[in-house]
Amino acid sequence: MTVGQGGATLTPNTEEGPPSVQQIALEKIVRAAIDSPKNISVQVVTGASDVLIDSFYTSEIDIRDLSTLGSENPPGKAAPIAAFLSEQRIRLERGIPATIEGHRMIHPFSGRAIRNVSGYSRISSDISQFTLATQSGTIVTTFQKGNSVVTVTIQSQNGEVTSVMRQ
Ligand SMILES: [Zn+2]
Image 1 (cartoon, helix red, strand yellow):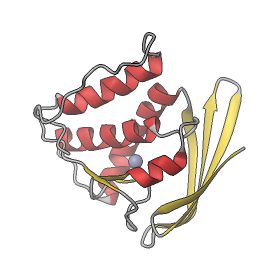
Image 2 (cartoon, rainbow, N blue to C red):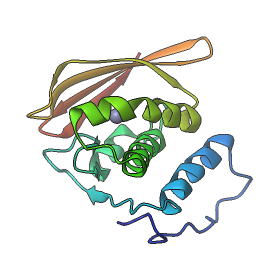
Image 3 (cartoon, rainbow, N blue to C red):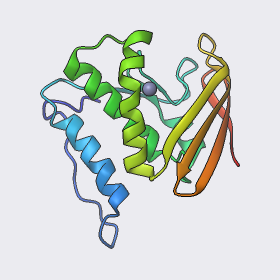
Image 4 (cartoon, rainbow, N blue to C red):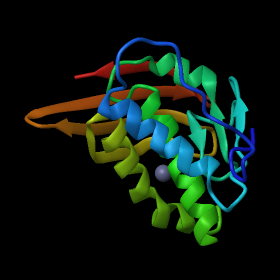
């Protein structure tokens, strides 16, 4: 799927009622990618063993993982999509390489996308029990919204989300 340079369009859905603030935030992020002067080319994969949710490095997003995450925030699935698209757009517009160092520079923008789309701020992320090479292990992310702090533990094996726990 190519979303930059007019390669994709958004059409209104048929759901009733005005869009929420968070739906508008997601639409803005998708639209920014579509309207980007850069060609934001992303691959949608399913069940890829080398992609846990998404890959900054290969610009892939795994819809089976998104499905396993479900709709409940955090993390939901809209926020990860927004985070992924924001990272790819900003990386390409700024000419930043798809490397670990490049990701370090761009990653804060995904936090902003997550906050706008889910209402939750990502306050910390522990990847010490996750192995990049095998895309397996445990990722613990803490989110906050007002006084509510939610810790999300995602277990994964070979690039697949195997469980999501919220505490
Ligand atoms: Zn990131």
